[in-house]
Structures are given as structure tokens and as C-alpha cells.
Length: 489
Image: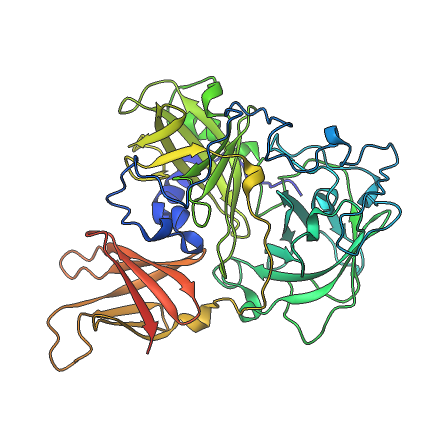
């Protein structure tokens, strides 16, 4: 199951990755709008109610188990501490049982050094790699990930992709006693539908049950949505081995590490400074700011989950440049999109501003900058990531974006099959004073717009559309930074 890609052609791969992805695809996937701010004119001194509190425990990667952010760690006897994995604590969600089962009999302790705040939770007990053994298929695997008691999974098989798991109550996957959950599953895949939820955002519903050997999915509601795997009576066997090597989400594959990419591009690297270790969030925006976590072993993950849009979850490797770039320390990342099956190189070049990271323009030879110059990352405990509920709303699907939209000031936007866009500054088509046309490309949770260039034939990046909610779009124009809201006509 380890990816068989070789180092041959590695620089070509890197160049393709650099050219394929824009900064907006990372920062504004899942509809990230930074609270509606004009991203071209962010004042780093502005503090709003949306900002997270800067942790008093510092940001050296060592979590203070006595802080207010603590959530059921083994140190306070709320985690699984008995040799047989038993725990009789009841979290009050009605799913308490006498013995908390650990699928396969062992916890996945190799989490690439990423923090786990509730080691005995349902989500953390599920974390690990499993083989599908129920239907006789070969080489089908599922890998589960715990992100602060939110549960996600990557499916490696035909139509590989990502899965988001939800429960009906807030406690849900944080339970330390439950061995079964009624779950709703939203699936998406870059291999089949450009990253949008399958079944038009209608979740599949079934029971997820821990066994001594692994996990079983039973009682599938046939009237619910589809899954990436065959949903009827699925059995998963937990297997030993390191996570992060499944084809399609091989974020630990050294063949494409950030260190190797820097070596191939003749970029000198140095030791990781302590100041970067731990968690950070862009502008501290809890609703839409992307969060990063850097480990001392050179692994990085990024996370953003917004309403009705596919989770932005990336993992990969990072290294640190020896030379200063524009007076800043350059972090070189090669990270893989969960569910998309591709890795991309990114820069994060920073100067310390107190306890914060003020971003400056990074090395233009290596990937895209994570954020615009002057953007700010502040320290962030990953335990502050919210637990997600599914409220029954339909998510945005690929086919549903096509159509005609109008803005409050009378502009009209057409999105057509074939992925073309037409923007009219007026709905009066008899008097077209300003008109833009081009094509768009889908990224997780957004559309990238390119204006047709009739002079030299090179399309020009025009802006991006954030998929806010059903029948509503938000267009941000790159040149002016203007954001326009549209509603389906």
C-alpha cells in the first residue's frame, strides 16, 4: 500500500504542483472569507470578537494539561488508563457501556506527533488503518483520523476519497464509553466529482460498531446517501503499520517530502526553530480561519471546516530554509489534500511579532505563499477546534452551481455546463457596458475563475467564487479585492 512513485521526474512534479494551485484554493476552500474582511487591506492590529484567545501556556508544542482548554486527558483519570482499555465513566450521551472497546486491541499511538487531547474518546479509539475484509475485494483500505474528536476517514480503493462522520448530538465522538454510534457520512472525491459531496450532499446513515478485531458498519439506511465503499454490512479489520502511506493521501511518503523538494531545488535548509512548533490560526478567526499545527519531527497539518462545505484537511512534511527571505524565516511545506489525492508545495514565510507570526512574501522558487503579505497567524490550541454536528441541511453539489445569479446592485453572473462563466455588470443585456467571460476550475469548496485573453491566448486569473450556501455565491475579484454576493435568479 505504500505509494510506488519514484524520485524520477520529481522536479517536474513540483513544477506542476506549483502551477496548478493558487493561494486562494488553500485559504478560501470551504468558503473561507475571514469574516467578510477585505483581504487586501487587513490591519493586523484590529481585534474582533471572532478572534481566538492566545494561549497563556505559550506555543512551544507542549500542552499545559492544567489549562482551561484541557479535555479529558489520561492525566486527570478521564482517559483510558487501564491495561485492558476499560473505562466506566459515563459522558451522559446515553451510549455508556461497561467496557470501552479499542478496535483491534490497540490505540494508534503514531499520530505523526500531532496533539491528541482526549485519548480515550470514540474518535481516538477509531483512529488507525483498517482493511476492508467483508466483501472479498482486495487492496481496499480505510484510514481514520481524529481531529479534536471530529472523525474523518480516507478510503483507498476504486474512487478513493474522503469521508466526514457526524453524530446526532454534540458529545458524539468525544465519548469514552460508547462502542457504537449511529453516524451520518458525507463523502467526496477528487477522482470522481471534483471534490464535491456525492449524492448531492445527502449523507449516508448507518451504525458504526467497534469490535475486538476492528469496526463494522451495519443497518445501512438504503434511503440515505451513497458511500465510497459498498455500504451493506461492511467489516473492517484493524492492521498494524504507520498511517500516512495510503495511495492518494500519502502525506508521510518520503519520496515527496519537503526536504527532498528543497534539495532538488537547491534550497539550503536548517533545524526547525522552537518558535514555530505547535498550533496557529490565521487571524484567529474561529469561524473561517485555517489552523496549522507543526510538529518537532517535521510534520504539518492544516484544518478548516465551515458550514455545508467539504472539510479542508491537509497533512504533509515541512522544513525550514537556512537563508532569510525578505527578512523572514521561510517554512517550506509539501502537503496533501485529504480526499483529492495530490500534494502541493507551499510557502509560509514569517517574522516574529511578539507571540504572533507576521507573514512576508516567501521564496518565489518554491510553491505558493500560504497568505498575503502582512497576514497574521496567532498561537492556537488545536483543542479549540469545534466538534461538528450535522444539522440535516443539504450541502452544495457540483451540478447545483450551474445557473444564473444576480447581485443586489444589478450585476448578473452565469455559470454554465462546460465550466464557463459570464459576468455582466447589468442585467439589461441590451446595454452591456462591461462584460467578462472565461472558464472556472473547481477546488475544494470554491471555484477559480480565469478570464479569456484574446490577445496572446493566456487566460488571466480573475478571482474566485466561495460556495457559501445553497443558491448563494460570493465572488472575490483579484485585481480590486472587491467581494460581491450573488443569489440564484
